[in-house]
Every structure is written in structure tokens, then in C-alpha cells.
Length: 198
Picture 1: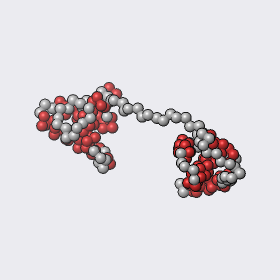
Picture 2: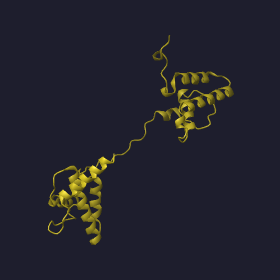
Picture 3: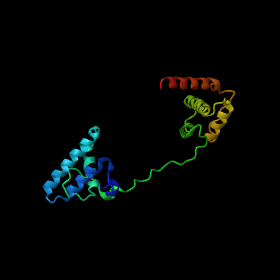
Picture 4: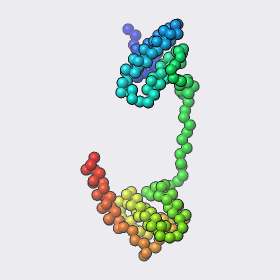
């Protein structure tokens, strides 16, 4: 008895040994028309193996690509689609460039840093004041999300000053942010609500 481990390695194991044997036989057929009919029959069987994928775009195209791969690109027929090329099959995709810029305060995040930088470009006026107040409040919320103890407004204003390069300076006597306990209570209420609705 011959074991599967003694057989040649399957190119696409999800189709199984029998489909691979059918493909191997199809490659050996000498009559071109007969070979094409055999290939169509194999495609129909392959499609029946995964009926739930029939709604996928280009399902038939994928099957023909798989047939070419299983035949090690030796099946000489007129394919109804342009099949994948052997050299394209093993090429690596281009590297994705990652932004490796340093985040000064991770609990605030990169987006908040960018927003603070953008706020420094705004002209002086009520719109800028409102934006700065919103940013400072968001900084306090972010701080309290990661650091569960209370935080003094002076710390937030100092960080805001630093992140803006000294362009946004808030006075703790004039500017008041929401109390830490209020923000923590709101966060706890949200967390409890989301746990109940899971």
C-alpha cells in the first residue's frame, strides 16, 4: 500500500490528492480539444468542492489560476482568463513604509499631537480658543484613560505648552477643565454600558 507521505507534495492541498491526479492526467492528454474538455470538467469539480465561494468576484478566474498552479504551469490549453504567471507567484510584495516617528506622550497619541500642531497655525480668535479648549479637554480624557488617578490641570497645560512648541500657553487661573472624577465617572459609566450590551 502506498501512503500519501510517499506521494509527491500537493501544490494546493485543499483540493486533495484525487483532483491533483486528475490534473496530472489532464496534462498527459495529447489531443488539445480533449485536454480542454478535461480541464473544464476539473474546473467544475473544483467549483463544486467550494460552493459557498461562488458569490466571490472572479471565482472562476481563481479556479483557473489554481488549475495552472496544480499543473505546475504545464497544462497547454487556451485559458478563458489570463492566468497568473509562475514568476509572479513567488515574488514578495513591496514593503509598506511605516511611519516610525517618535510619539512624545503615548497616552495622548500621534493624532492629538498633529492636531495641536495644526492648532498653532490657526489665527488668534474665538475659533482657536474653542479648539484649544477642546484639545486640552481631550488630553485630560486621554491621560485619565491610561492613568486612572486624577491629574492636575497644570500637568495638561504644561504638556500642551511642550507639544505646541511654546505656542499655546494656558493659564490655570483663567482656563478650567472638567474635574478628573467627573471624567472618570463618565468613563466608568461608558465601560459598564458597553459590558452590558456585549
